[in-house]
Amino acid sequence: MNQVDLALRAANSNLNAAQQQVNQINATIGQARNQDGEEGQAAADDAAGQLPAAQSGVESAQVAVQQAQATYDEAVAQANKRTVTAPVSGTVLTMSAVPGAAIVDEGKESSAVMLETNAETHEFKRVRVTVKAKNNTKAVVEGNVSKGDVIMLDGASAADNTGDAASSTSQTAASDERAR
Image 1 (cartoon, rainbow, N blue to C red):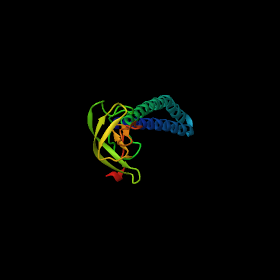
Image 2 (tube, rainbow, N blue to C red):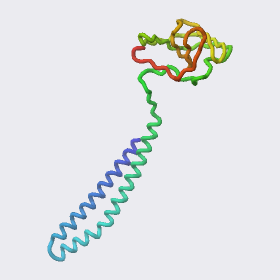
Image 3 (tube, rainbow, N blue to C red):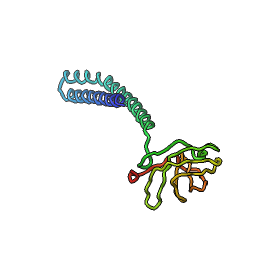
């Protein structure tokens, strides 16, 4: 990114130098025309002969700036694609399942870390539980949970410990600074 930025700055610097050269030639032409006699006219003609090359230099420098700017813009766009920005502040706890996926395979057990949320105080804590799958839509959650606790299990949400499970609308769980 630094190299692209330096290239853009160099192209702009070259453009400024080319424009200054054109301005200097125009000033020389003006001064020469104000002089009396053939010497003034000869100096004006000489300077005017240099003007097309200087103007061509400005045009080339403008193209170089446009190319450097396009390269810079592309580098910034690529850098932005590599940057992950969270929609809210907090800590990502899990991102391992897709909404609608089974909590665990049928007939198997799995230990999972879950997030228990107290809706009144908005406090969070991590609790270890065991999930026993009944089928793809029902599971028994065993652990230190109470009816009505909202939990996140690898991308699936269980409403309570009766075995009813529902798909989660999010693959992540976030906790704010109060959770620490």
